[in-house]
Amino acid sequence: MARMYSRKHGKSGSTKPYREEPPEWVDMSPEEMKNKVVELGKKGLNPSEIGEVLRDQHGVPSVKYFDMKITRILEENDLNNELPEDLRKLIEKSRKIRNHLEENSGDSSAIHGLEQTDSKIRRLSKYYKRKGRIPKDWKYKPEKEFHKRK
Image (spheres, rainbow, N blue to C red):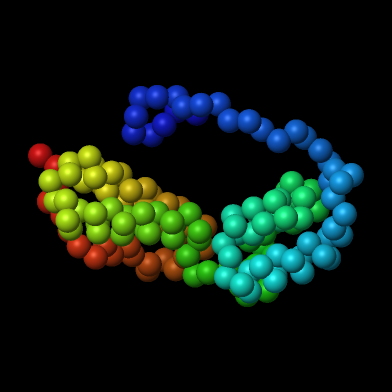
């Protein structure tokens, strides 16, 4: 798939082999899986971090083999955050770039990166408003404004 802002096509990614049931080495039942996801969610881990823990420490390649999704399990148990994880990560990235620009105000590539990140935040928030994941009146308000590129 082509990249949005560069004229490159990127690397082709690997795909998981298609399986209808979990591999034979997975010894967790669906109920144990739900309990583990809820336990890790109560510790404050993000859905992607929970997936990594399940993969690395418990040998579960994917929760989808059990017809579940980590975010749905967390929503059922009221452990989801008010913002989706990808939107939160983009806002955090934007905040880091703004902190960098406080000390390095002439960094034009950082200014360009900030514009792109803010654009992604606005686009993603529009999508989540349409889907009902965030409130319709939610608005992204960056802390500081920096001069635009020339």
